[in-house]
Image (cartoon, rainbow, N blue to C red; front, top):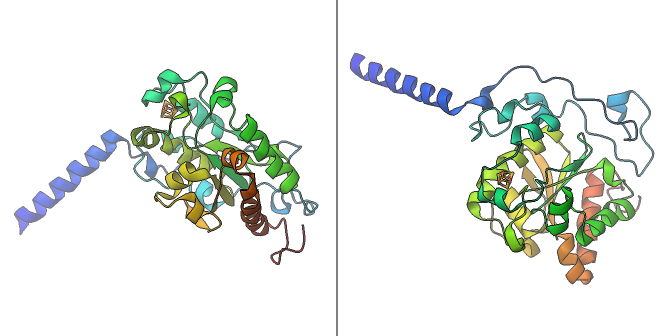
Length: 277
Ligand code: SF4
């Protein structure tokens, strides 16, 4: 009995030592520093600013005490990158990623496309990966599809693009716009996970098949997934068509608008019965 107990203790001790070597940064418990104040141009929620609720159509930033951010660490307890979960702001995360060569896409990129927008946005859009224009400019969604996404945000939802946060699953452009490969997604997705935890939006919109399948870890086609709420890291997530697809199939803009209206309802930008907004 004593021998069994000793063996058990020894194996637990070995395991803990191994975790220590591999980086158990998910267990980091130091307090989360206060988030930087939102730029003045962003409408601020009553809870954050002590000011009256913004006018209809404005998108307040997410509360500082959003659960994932307040927890101070990524939901992924065993991060593949020691130190990743210790990044407390998007700037720190970008610095952590650095001149990344953690997967083979590094050799093809002009710019690493990290993400853009309000670091405390209530709404986050996640696409697949940078295309040619995004790679050239270092910003997500700046091509024709990006302009359509801006239209959805600004003309459809009545928000400003700067009020939301926009990024991709993959930060570097795959050659000839091929789909990212599983090892590339595995290498890059921890950065997206951390971005989600740091922004801690109330709603995520997954744009297109690849983003939805990567975020929800399922192989269902986007045509069957779209319009149905999912959850990512404790956050409500809506899959819908990618703007690039809508450029080829404009008739399906109608379906995207249905999905976006659902998102607007959750964010309080339109009445739940759909008559307001
Ligand atoms: S795709 Fe992601 S993991 Fe690969 S090199 Fe770029 S940033 Fe690094």
